[in-house]
Length: 111
Length: 115
Image (tube, rainbow over all chains, first blue to last red; front, side, top):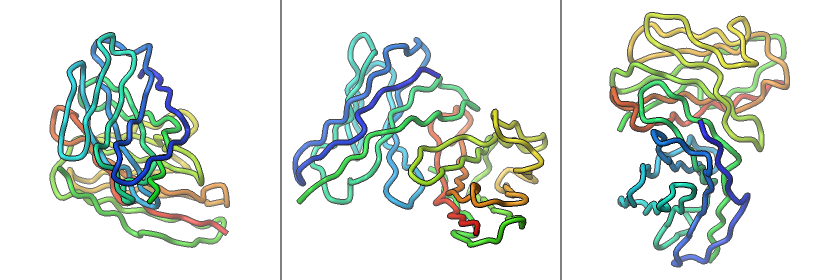
């Protein structure tokens, strides 16, 4: 799996958009970008994934650059409950490939 | 999505003893994974468990220390053997959702403290 680089921590004001960047410059053509988050003392939670097109679901939006070397996870209206560690992971899209977790970004949403 | 439960949710154990952690899924899954998360650290994969075959361990993890069972498609156990304080961690199981491996879903974790 390709490595990812994320800032170790970020702050965001409640109600504002949180934009979490991720660099994955060595990503392969068959590797997807996945985002998970881990709220304190809980198991990681799947957020979203994508290959090359931008994706949106009820939790977040994922913007992937045209060269696929970086991406941004957007939480449109951050709440205090979004305070968590966010992990960006690249993984080939086939069964059996485990997730390789990096350090992630610790997002603190402040009132 | 898959709903995963783990037992126990937490435990405090004495060094030299063993603890078996159970992972139950609400649907049949092919692949199950066991991760460890040491205090303040990210997740590290221990092993991959397929039903009907021996688990595949990652570098640094051995079967004698972390024996795994996978008796059916909805259940797995991980045993932490001959524990030491360095084994104090959160242990998490996860499953690939569906045959395509699109996403992985995680259990709530088992918090282990070894004294």
